[in-house]
Image 1 (cartoon, protein in one colour):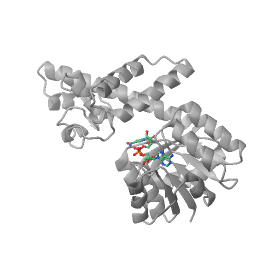
Image 2 (image 1 turned 180 degrees about the vertical axis):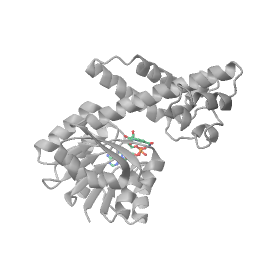
Image 3 (image 1 turned 180 degrees about the horizontal axis):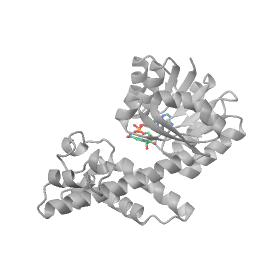
Image 4 (image 1 turned 60 degrees about the vertical axis):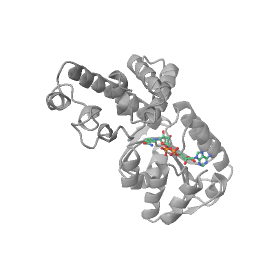
Length: 293
Ligand code: NAD
């Protein structure tokens, strides 16, 4: 049994912390929301008022926070109180420079740390089937792996500090591009008189096939489990996708990488945001494209 401090018990962090409890660990949760803390207590965890307090007794600290500034602030507190040699796992999706800076500070101060953002939404967090993309030293990765294995199904070591965030941002940019492409294709086919199911049957076995089509089709009908059949309730909200695309834009600027389609995707999801529809699933981009939003 390990003493784990879990900071950020939101939509993702709540079920991830619950899985660590189920695996027999002593999890102390921290969140700004009382309801989130109560949910952890109801599955057998305990709570503390601050990250500072929770980190004092922890062997492992896991964070699942909204963005880079939250991660920076929480670890500034945690590092003043955690025992030397404590392992830090940040699973939030944040910008690459912040991930690298916080890990460098942690290592200088005698801690082990990995960035370990996830792919898979709340259902995967609940089922313990997340994919972890992990950056950090081999030693830190080996220390983190047993805990990541509890919360996830596929655990990758992507290389040095920050490389987990690099994998995440590049993957999600590709997902946005493929979703928009799929939405354009279904809209074009329909406008030309070809129904969604027939186009799906053909394209899903032809060269247009991709995950956005066969697992998450943006047109209602062909994939029964897709958000398109539930009025585009997320799933993965367009606002979240836009957050990741903005991280991709910033990262591309820093690296001098051309991402013309990533930039266009960000512009299209910004239109969903301006229309006040970014709480819909990201596959609802088909409604923007078809003029239905
Ligand atoms: P969320 O907003 O539901 O949860 C974040 C939690 O952090 C909230 O409960 C908030 O109260 C808490 N928090 C904020 N500042 C805090 C602080 N200083 N101390 C303690 N708690 C604090 O968000 P989420 O959906 O759980 O996402 C968390 C991270 O995971 C984000 O970086 C997101 O981009 C990423 N992510 C989300 C999904 C998804 O489908 N929801 C999928 C993959 C990755």
